[in-house]
Amino acid sequence: MTRTLQDLNVTFIREALAHGAEQELVVLLQEQHPADLAEAIEPLTEEEKRRVFQLLNPEQAADVLVELNDLSREEILEETSAARLAEIAEEMESDEAADLLATLSEATQAEVLRRMGREEMKDLAELLRYREDSAGGIMKRELLAVRGDSTVAEAVAAFQQLSHTEDVEDIHNVFVVDAERHLVGVLPIRRLLLVDAATPIHRVMDPNILKVRTDVDQEEVARLFKKYDLLSIPVVDEGDRLVGRITVEDIVDVITEESGEDLLRMGGVDEDDRIFCLPSRSVRKRLPWLTINLATAMLAASVVAIFQDTISQMVTLAVFMPIVAGMGGNAGTQTLTLITRGIAMGELSLTNARRALIKESIVALANGVAIGVFMGLGTYLWKGDWILGSVLGLALIVNMLVAGVVGTIIPVLLKRFGVDPAVASGIIVTTFTDCFGFFFFLGLASLALRFYNL
Image 1: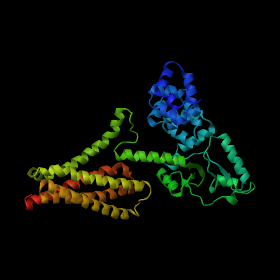
Image 2: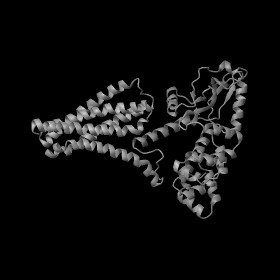
Image 3: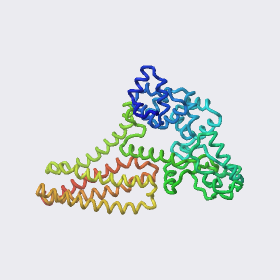
Image 4: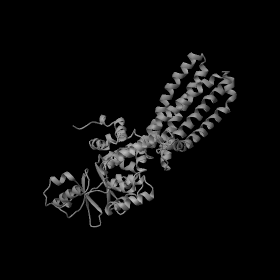
């Protein structure tokens, strides 16, 4: 009877390691899904993770490494020999093996490549040339390519040979190439079963090919998969020669990675910062952003300082200042999140940014009027002063409008100049809403004190 994941808990693993029951543990490990194995390994100490990992055969180890989080993978690989890494890499698909090698030092990379088979070494060395976040960096080298003058029967035979010699489970298309390996057509695998075996491939292939070059950003590739509902897409080099393919499972990883990175960046946290990494590393990653935030906070404070006399004449203003800044910041964050997502999904560009700006301005103004009127009436009922309520309500309307405009324009401009909108937009928008909010609120209050004896 197959044991369940519940049998493979931290206590069992630790007791097995402590009492030398490694053979029993090996049997249990072999019965588990790689994702379950990774989940069981995560809570262990560094030493325990390495000992358990050593009990896995190369094929298991390859599958588990893909499922582990970055920190656990780093802890395990740190003490894994080059010979063992070479065995594991040979069990991986080329894109996963390249990702594994990319985390190693150059010396270890070279040693691992030296211990691998000549063909695998050539494929991995080629993949490591490309940017990690490009089409070339996420593509697989394993694919099915045939000449246009081949027959359907020969294509089927090539598919069977590829499946027997390599661990390839997700071949969706036959790619048709010429003598120089230029991509000239594509044919879904299922079509091979529907046409006569003697039919030349060029007669049934589709010459209208959707493809990407190796230097295309992975986000653009993800947009193509979404737009055209693709299962895979061929990748060509600058000479239009077929060099690899990207599958939908690669794109799922890209989407997960990109969304996680954007979330971290919007919070001012580097993507390399992890929950259990060294405190010194987290400090190095976070302190620069906190320093920038301090500078922007001082800028907002300098705006407040201009109106010190106004605040001293009416201390009640200090009670409402956080409301003006906070509502502007919240409105700006809403707009910024929507615009940043639109840019990431390819829905927003410079050509349609004006429409987005008009729409977000209308939304911001409508929300500002609603919130401003509500807060103005509330202030009047609370403090019994209609002028103070009017000042607060008007300041909220203006600041929320500023938030909508700035929250739209800033990420678009950053993207235009090659800066990731998720990285810097939040700080800039918050600075605008704080400074403008304080300026409008305290400025209007100063005028009211001067002319209406507020």
